[in-house]
Amino acid sequence: MLEDKNQQRTSLADLGEFGLIKHLTDSIKLTHKSSITGVGDDAAVLEFNKKQVLVSTDLLVEGVHFDLSYMPLKHLGYKAVMVNLSDIYAMNGTATQITVSIAVSNRFPLEAIEELYAGIHLACKSYDIDLVGGDTTSSTKGLLISITAIGEIDKKDVVYRNGAKPNDLLVVSGDLGAAYLGLQVLEREKQVFQANPNAQPDLENYTYLVERQLKPEARKDIPKLLKELEVTPTSMIDISDGLSSEIIHLCTQSKVGCNLFEDKIPLDQQVIATCEEFKLDSTTIALSGGEDYELLFTVDTADFPKIKANPNLTVIGHMTEKNEGMNLITRANQKIELTAQGWNAMLKKG
Ligand code: ADP
Ligand code: MG
Image (cartoon, rainbow, N blue to C red; front, side, top):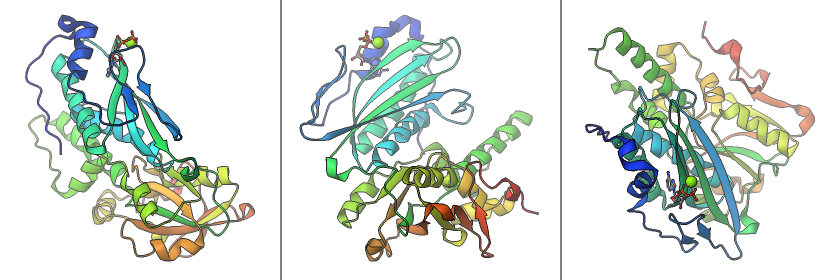
């Protein structure tokens, strides 16, 4: 995981807005041909001849999207970038630039914002992204972070949510549910700590879950892999809200139905073990947990031989005619309608 250092407390008021911006952006070096001018003018200048440009924005608010009592600022910066890059990859695109806007209260010293930016810079370096601008302002209370990601793609390669056809296979990258369980583990530790501040957190059995919650990785590798396999998905979306809700988006926008098979949903061993321990149903967690940042897509059945042996990809179902509805086929071979809120009746195991 990422290191967090926060010893000194330099007041943001001493630096002022421009001093802070300069401090945070001074070391930036632009690497993309499409980045003509970055930080320092009224707007960044990008040039993408013949390419289509993808733009996506997310706003993260303290107390709503993150809790700084267990989310180190460096991880928060990293995750805030991942959330945005994931949307570009979900279009089958290449992410190239981001802008970062922050609103900070005087509760935060410079060192805290440096930590946030250390995570942002690390994410940019690992994913080959130029930071080309942003905005900096004050807030009365918490911290707000808004990131805009920009990407490029050839027109012929763009994958929308609305292209799925009946019989297409439904495919997901990686595994599901771990990030949500990581959050449950961290919440539990927070409560233990509040009751007894001397208690040491015991996270040994949950390392993968906590990592997925605190340091998610956007699936930059999947558009690349699909290109290598010569597979163009017919539709695609990233999993931010939970498998169920994302399947419903694909089906609704593509005007198709689907059958999702419970026994095919990919789960990590730690997810299975922790669900047993917490008396939670692992299917419910995968369907409704969210924050997995995996990619969910559909492919023509003719492409099945190209993807079937790939360890990064799992076929979890298939699309149907719209009038067949959107269904989960359980291990007991029951058909249950998918709902965006998840499968509440099964939330607690008997
Ligand atoms: P303006 O008055 O045009 O909004 P600013 O003084 O806010 O300009 O910003 C100056 C430059 O610094 C701009 O290029 C802007 O994109 C960049 N910038 C401002 N805040 C941030 C930030 N938090 N992170 C990265 N770049 C920033
Ligand atoms: Mg400004």
